[in-house]
Image (cartoon, rainbow, N blue to C red; front, side):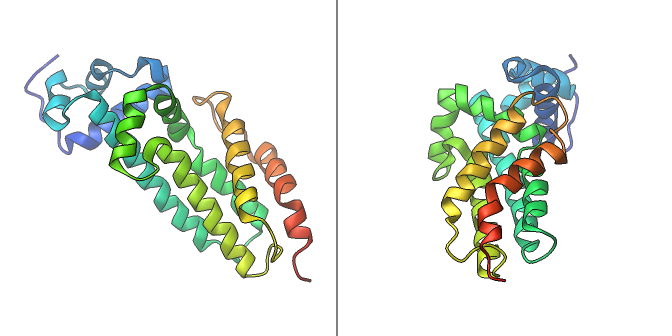
Length: 201
């Protein structure tokens, strides 16, 4: 492996390489050597930018969490437009896309990574699920304020159902395409049916 390769925006290229390894080979294959080989650079490049591999993984997870925050803004902006079920269906397919779903097992099974994430940010131990939960909860609250779901709808319970069930729907094979609108849409419609049915006429 050449040692003189210069990477423009090396951090982002290493993140992109890690995502490709995750999607192609799974979380067990994600090592510092696999990442640098995929990026086409010397192993030392990673260690020039990160204290160790867990520090790299922390920044990888936080980068994904930041991207989910951006997608959450788009979900909130959709409040009052389209249908509640349609907006949530699209959001789940985005929030639980292939890369976030590939990263979640890393967080689950790497104790040191979870510990560092908790130190890096409040609730950071499960950063991606936390971002998805916040996004959906805020969206449902906005729709409740607009009268598109019942005023007494339990947003917290609906959010937990959508996040938990959505996570399970997308867990089967994180390298595959998402389950598709029929599977996700049917699930979302069932979860919010009562809250939508009881909204003001």
